[in-house]
Length: 409
Image (cartoon, one colour):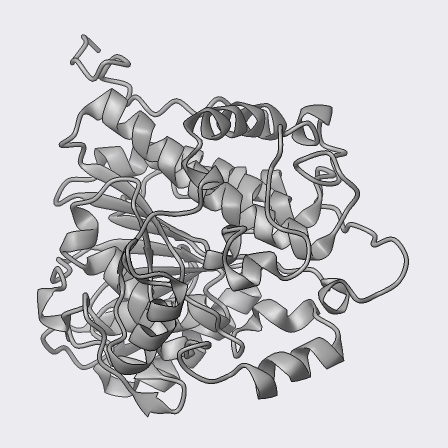
């Protein structure tokens, strides 16, 4: 059977590619060199079955584009989500061109504006008939972080359609609502364990080098979010673009852990949907930093774009693919994964992690920051997120009660 590359769900076929066995080999490349990572064995990827559907937000550029390409080449049906259908269609065409005859899956382009809750709800309604094997909540914005805090004067927050501060509104609240809308589809999809993958970063950790650069990430008592849609910062402080981005990644870890807790509570330890979160590493060549000032972009490109400090797009895509198809990542619930230089054992320390990244790079499970493990904070963030998006996020499927016991329907 030939593989069909599609545009939007209602659009016509773009082109047909020669059928071949799905490739399970993912190239592991560092910046400027080929690298092999412990913890990732391409031979241990779950071979996608026909109809294995993966949604990737932010799929039009950077890590999302590369992840979509690798998942497509691995045999998945990839729904490439961009801010507009036009951008997503362009990305689909470029992925097809880059993959040539190696793509064994299919691609579809859809528009989801994560800065507009009505766009998210429309997408969920439009794909009401769809089933999903995985959703990758990858899209993100990073405001011009005022030259890493060196700019004088107050910073001004951009706003989403509903008036949220854009960084938290897109990176967390938009994904929160999208996940709420698609979870029933994951729960009703037959087959192996379905996956929710959230892209975060070690920058969420106040003790990491990136976390310490400028104001450290912290949600405080969430007094900012309690003010309603007009919030500036989660902790109630004045807007700081650098901190807002860090806080959004902290929200991602807290959200993943709280969703995983609720899945366990509702469905038990053998829940057929798992949620995990990971750091793709620092990727200077991604489109994430497009809103940074020219000096900051130049600094990132020329001063820090070297392993193990930096991760190539191809390697970041490999990490994402492993989160979606890796066997071990389908067996954990609420886990945080990362690669070099951030991965190290508790007894080793950060310096050893840097050395490990040079001589024996590894991608594995690690404890997130102390604040990210605050279960009470995670529950309160969930509640406030429900209030802000105006939708209750009930994890229990319709045919089960909150204890996971079957009920009559």
